[in-house]
View 1 (tube, rainbow, N blue to C red):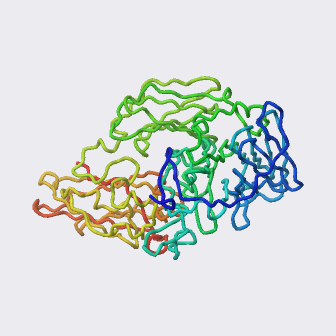
View 2: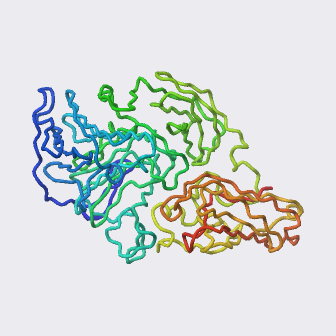
Length: 559
């Protein structure tokens, strides 16, 4: 593999090409107390607070607006492209910015209206710890973006658009000359899948280690921007509330720390991961909304019965103020979710991404709420229902369907996608792989499913179920059987109103459409195929892949 090709290193991350060697000499701050690393301290150059970590990192924060205006690591400037700084949103504007030092910690505080934002440095570390406290909607969304100079980490990954030459959709989805698509939206990963994101050259790594997202929205399976790369430079994101494809209301309060971390090319230290980060040194810094470990609790369960062990199970906690999650142990379903703010929560057990059980729990500071074995009722898992035939499985995702995997990192028009049209024959052995993960009114509406019934089955009424993971522009399926019976148009379920299917996400609100089909709709000749037609209906949407659509979880005809 050449230096310009992509590879993977570390845990759940992205690793990219060779870095430029040009840079400027690091600034030196005043010396800190003897217990700190040599050179650790800060200075004021008139326009910025300049922080020297006493390791290999010097950074600057604007005194006027709280922007991070410089990141110099080992003498090379990494921050900035197109005249833009690193900041909350696209920059906060005029703010009150102050700095304090307490022993081996320096804290820069930014006040902008009701929003509070913080940067912290620790002596001898090549890290910038960041917190954001959003109190209300006066700032429209919540993200932090580290803007990285062009040429330092070039790549041709799905979330890149360095080498693209035509716009496919809006101003953020592009196609290369070979037909492969690129967009900053194509991260591949759900929040639960990664601890950090960034790039490495092999000798320098620049990362954002994500926070625990307790004040974010969307749960463990939410997909959002992680990074992007273009000819103008790169961006690394910590997204707390993006407003795109959101299934929950916005949460407010302190989020963090998330960490801007430099390494000598390897992955960031596991001690920085959201699940392991010890911030006792931050307990006395006076950060607005900060709650230390002693003010938090834990929920633990001895096991989960009634699981389908072919699937991973996740336990989530959520209320209007916070969200948390953890994996259930595959052997017995044991789980433990720590660092939880006190309060009453809905506990949800997910099979894959499909909610299979929920209950209420209360968490107290400094205590563990212990639950006996949770038993998931058989009726809670749609897969347990007896079916004449079933396409896919009920796991809350389109996994296994045609083009499903590709759609988390490519546009539906991508040259690598199999054709979205085509019919499905039950009993062929390829039902699931032939059935498209997504259905659109303007692309593949009218899909046909062929199947035979026995005489006894044809003499009875049956229920057809179509599970979806999201819909776009109110797209929902209306069915016709044998051109003789047509269902009513179902009401649209509550779903996000933004783009989803074309920007790498099938995650909305899982929903099941049910259709009661009378016995008279079936063919009585058992040698003939019954024909199910699935149309996508809606008066919303535009054309092609932005027409009304839906992502499919499973479809079955119950016995």
